[in-house]
Length: 265
Image (tube, rainbow, N blue to C red; front, side):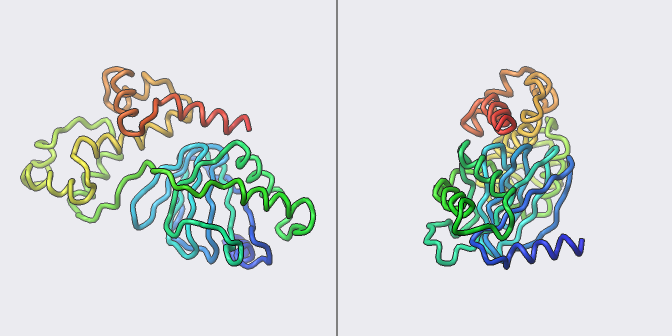
């Protein structure tokens, strides 16, 4: 742990605009809440990760990255086996129009290759040579336009937290709003109001988001749609597909194809 902390400190202060690190995490790895002195570009070369911070919890699928401003508290967890690539970027003097808040970004095939290349370069690379030109190309390839993340909002009400934990542990749970109201000891009207206040969603839409969170890791692992549908409490693959597209705007196969593309690259 001490060596890891020393490496992180070194990467925050190295006299280069970008420092990079490659790390592998086992399935189910849970990180810890921390911050960095530099802004961070988080990218999963393969696998998916879950990022938690004060605005909620984001699921980061293949071919997506997360931009975190310097000093922003966060926790990174692995969903399945994760190959993570991190760029620590000193934005001082670079003239980049970087987001001021956490943002999810697209990763093009070219940007994927550039990130992989930079993590293989010496930390104190030659800024005036070919390595410096790679850095310039990478920065020019990043599209800073934020895209809507698949997220679960931060829950503050203790009763709603209990419900969220139960649904995340068992996304196939089919109990109705009325049944959950009785279990939590509150009225249906109160539970409806709590869900709307904390998530800005209906109870069913919130459940659909939680199920989608559970589905994407299974999709990227290549599990058949029928098996995923059964694990999430759907009678058919078609009904699961309809829900998934309603939540994400994409068919489940789009996430499978993106993961396969990332692995090939």
